[in-house]
Length: 456
Image (cartoon, rainbow, N blue to C red; front, side):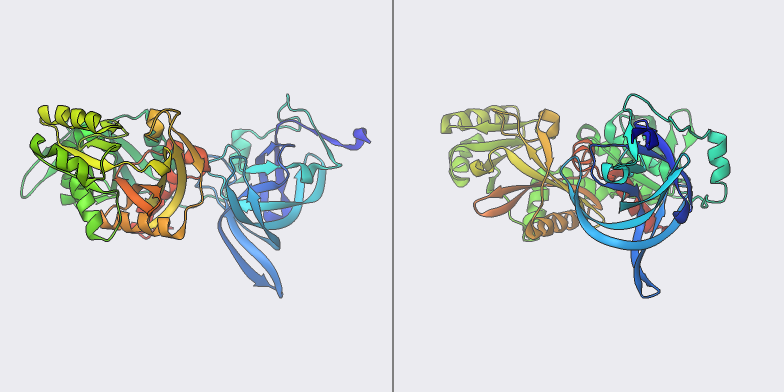
C-alpha cells in the first residue's frame, strides 16, 4: 500500500543508531542497486567468534576533522561496479537505517566516497517495498541547521594535524591545483597557493630566504608541492631547490623534476634501469637525417621536440620525404628533437599510470580523437578505466623510482614487443584520471606528505 510507504526526495538526511552516526546526508538513487556508505581505515576482525569490520567515517562532506569510529557485523564481500565502470571489492555490512520516523535494516557496502558528492548512497534494494521517491523534491523529512550539525558532532572532532603546505604553481584556477588545495584543507592542513612568478629568493650563507611579492617571507612551511609548467622549469626548480635548502620537504625534488624535463636524459636514465622504450634516435646535424630515419625503422615515425609537452611539438611523419622535411625544418630552427619509431598497433591509445610514493594508485587508458595519433586529454583525447597488467605496474613503479619522483604520471604504450615506456611526467594532471576513476588522487598526494611526517 502506497500510503504506508515513506516518500523521499532525491536527497535526504538519515541516521544509523547502531553505528553511532546521528545524521548523514544521502543521495536517494533508485537507479543504483546497492547502498554505499563512505568509509576509511576499513579493517576486518573477529568478535565473539564472528566476522566483524571496523572503519572510520567523516560523516560531513568536505570535513575531515569530524570522525566517527564504527564497527558492524560483516555480511559479505562483493565486487561492485561503479557508474563509471570501475570494479572494486567491498565489505558489506547490515545495520538499521533510521529515516524520519521509520527504521528498518539495510545492507550497505563500505567504500571511500571522498571524490563523490555524498557520503551515503541509498540504493533501490534498501528502499524496496518501503519507499516512494519524488526526484523533483529534496529534504522532505527535514534537514539539520549548521548549528545543530555542530552540536550533534561536537564530541567527534579530531585534533588537526596542522601542517603548513605550499602549492608552488602558476594557475590557481587549474583543476589539478584546486583539487590539491581542497584535499589538503579537507585533511586539516593549512594550504597556501604560491604563484611561482611572484616568488623571489635571497641567496645567503647564514640567512637564505624566499620572499613573496610585497616582501612576505616564506620560510615557515612544512612541505611544498611543486607543480611546475615546462615553460618555467628553470625558475620553478630554482625555487624548489631553495625550499630544500631551508629543509622544507618537497613532494618532488628539484633534481627529479629537472631530469624528468630533459626528455633525452630521462630516456637514458630509464634505459639504464632496464626499462624498454620505442627505438629512439638523436642527432645534432641535418647531415645525419637519412641514417637517423633508418635507425628507428624508417617511416612512419614520430618527431618530438625535446621541450614539448602535453602532445605539443610531436609530429607524425608518414613518409620518408615528410620525415626529412620535418626533421630538417626543426634543425634549421636549432631545435633539439628526438626521432622515434611509430607503434602502429597501439592505434592511438596509451596508458597513464599515476604513481604516488612507489605505488600505482590509479590507471586510465587515453584514446586519441579520430584522425589523431596523440592520446593526450589536453588535445581532446578521452579517458577510460583500464586494468593494467602486473608488468605494466612494475614498469610504472620502476620508472618513477628511476626518475626519483614521489609523484609521477607514467605513460606506457602496448606494442607487439610488449609494454614500452613513452614518458614520465613530474606534474601529471588530475582531471582526466579523477574523472574516469572517481578516485581521490589529490588526497593520495596529501597522504604521501603526511606519511613523511608520520601523520595518520
